[in-house]
Length: 320
Image (cartoon, rainbow, N blue to C red; front, side, top):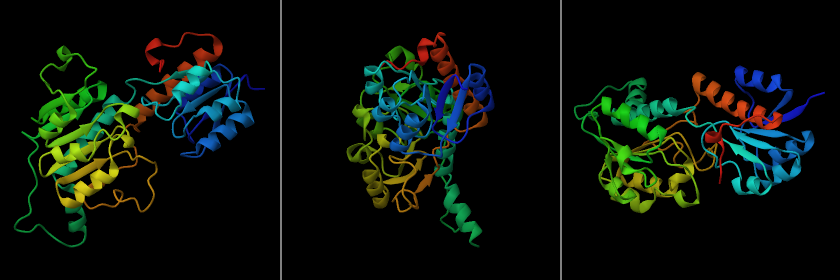
């Protein structure tokens, strides 16, 4: 009989992470991709979960109440917006995350979106596949000298800044929680609007919270230069999607690279899913072989420690 029951809110977990959990007597109960909050709660009740390894489904108070013996919710990643943190704290349930586990992968994806938009790769490839060739006015944009604005300057933002420097982009950042001394050669600005006004590319890398909901709104988009780009590889709720669609339709924003949406997966008729100026990807920026192992192992280590009386690394604990 299993010693512990662990719910995995997705269909798979990296083999090294599975080994860590099985070594301490855990049975892993997998779920279909993107389960509803109710489905998570139902499974928690059915197996009386001791832990949830949260990747693709929300873990809310109902799930916690459904399994009174639950001790930990471990995020398979860095963001914790899928977990009701206050409900967990009120119930004495530990919440952890995996800081740094996918930093390089997300930064690489960010740069790929910037390059693809500036070089017009998607529409040019589509036109060529349809039998067309370049016209007399066809051109793409220079990356060197382009102004990149980073909204958030944590680990991912700093890695993007380093990579962008190799392309001779000029980098600015806004992150009020980061001391001025840590910006180094990156220009520090004092507001989101100032960042927007001086950015040919605005790339979003801040955490999602009530205070940052729709931080990129109509006013921010209007402040950006004509023909600029928006990149979001962080969380969909950071960008007002209706405002972005309007700015794209007007031509003020030349393009957007979106790896995340406010509701995932977005509905088939979502205006940004098939927009001609949008390069969308399915929340895959952190899904590389290396990142999947890193995220899974870090989450599994936290679960194993929490369930067996071990020490959970303090830097992984979410404190509200």
